[in-house]
Image 1 (cartoon, rainbow, N blue to C red):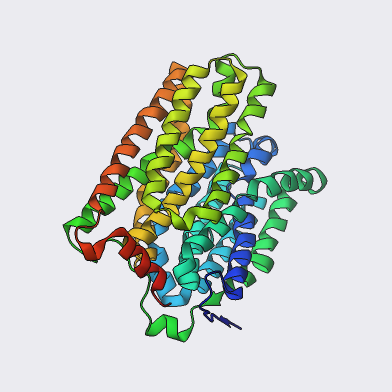
Image 2 (image 1 turned 135 degrees about the vertical axis):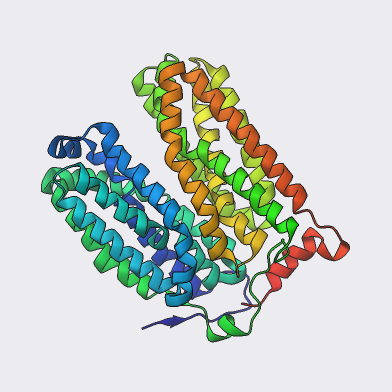
Length: 422
């Protein structure tokens, strides 16, 4: 069974695009909630039953991200062979296999094996393929569709942390993992297999969304290198620092209860960024968003260093950092589509995913070492210096992608994207 996309001249989504966003929202919430987020809840029973240290338990996430980096480039050929639906269904099957292995683990070897399987399935079942699928389904509305998916997916930890905790108490962690494997097999896999596909017209004769860069040449290579540097460095901060915000606040003198409360304000900041993208994002260039979000991130880090034990400014830091970090995450998804177009989106996302996932995997450990050896100020200085480098790379990217001629003006490019038929 398949659903064929039909297009209307309306400015909003058609019903098929909405269904795709909602279906992928369910699978992304489930996919992240049953893999990446489970150690935060199950760390104690996993440590106790498997004889693992806390570092070893969270080392599974690092293994997942490193394997994701190594396998990110396989997404494009699999999508070309099986389509986005087939690739994501395969990813769901791999996630189920990983959870079954985890449920039967008796020690470190099987535990790490489960996370290696998660890493192989992640580029197929999680964000990378989901955004590629939406770029093929939503076409000229891809950015808004992706923003909607990000908004829904942001609920993953909110829903699955309490669910995982409740199931662990009533069923134990092994049966909980088996139940999650069932979700991948009987919920996520069918939803992926039944995703809408581009219409026959869209797949053959119609022009894809064009990119701002030429299809080849030195200008394109410079843009790709700068995008890699900017997005990887920005992700180093947005992935690595949040895990240590509570400890940083405690280290400067805030009580634990306030540190936890203040850190939770990153969530509303992220939600605010997502709503802003949904409402007005299509009117603002994505590289402009990138430069603005990195500037805000730098200001928030400087605010954190100056805040000391002043509670109001600590909350302001968490709120503004959460907003900036989520905006950076959106740029990481949307910028490749803007720069290189929908035709090359799967390949570019795979190529960018290799250095990014390596950096993301190392970031929490690097910040932990900085915090442990040199204190909170050193961790914040490291984040600030990295953000400055990311901002410089982003500004250079803006310069490299600046149109050269009257026929290449930003308004012309925007109209070309908006008017390209799927």
